[in-house]
Length: 339
Image 1: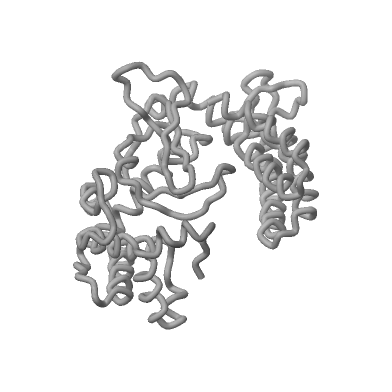
Image 2 (image 1 turned 90 degrees about the horizontal axis):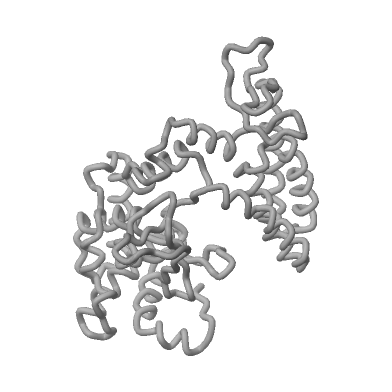
């Protein structure tokens, strides 16, 4: 079922949605259950192409189907399994829109374009609302050290500068979560966007600075509570104490540390079920316990600890405890500042 924020919104979308609605109503319940956000987006894109061609709705330099066709599809980089999946999705789109002129090959290419170029539309609190394609925004290149950020004001995509950008310098945004080691970020970019990043952060891969950053973001803390050093593997150590603090030299037992990590991971899985079922009080209590256990396990600048606190912020906002939510929010700031 489609919901609108008001009558004006409904009327402005009706020229397009009436065709989509009719197409979806004619599907069987089984077929409707197969519709993903990507398939719905493709259906809307093709309907919009026809309605713009027929001048039922307007088109302009930033809103027309030709811009989508200009986006990179990376077809030569896609494996056979994904190509088969895109072909199946294209045939489903053709079934949904039997009266449209549809080239299955073109739709397969468009699905590849969506994977590399679609954006998740979020509200002011960065909660996902839907998926959209913004061809002009897709021109902006990625950096793991961006100078700008993509935000949404309703359906409008807006680029905001995060720092003073000199005249002639390139505007750069991040396509992924930048809180991650170089290895984690490059893997995510290669899998999702099919390119290898060579930004200022990524070219340092393997350097001492990169090893330190990775250890801080994804590693463990020193067993000395008074030490803020980071740990690195020490394969030559005895008795299974394979992590060494790079500040004070103390060793931490690898087997015990990884076992503790697994136990905390199990609690996280359990806690997430409370959130998904709307049991926020129970979730809050468990996430507080997890936060304390992660403080003993991870470095204070750890991503895992930061994400737990971000989840607590969301839960506390749901519980209307704004003061406590602000406290946890402030605890996440040093992690971003460290990058």
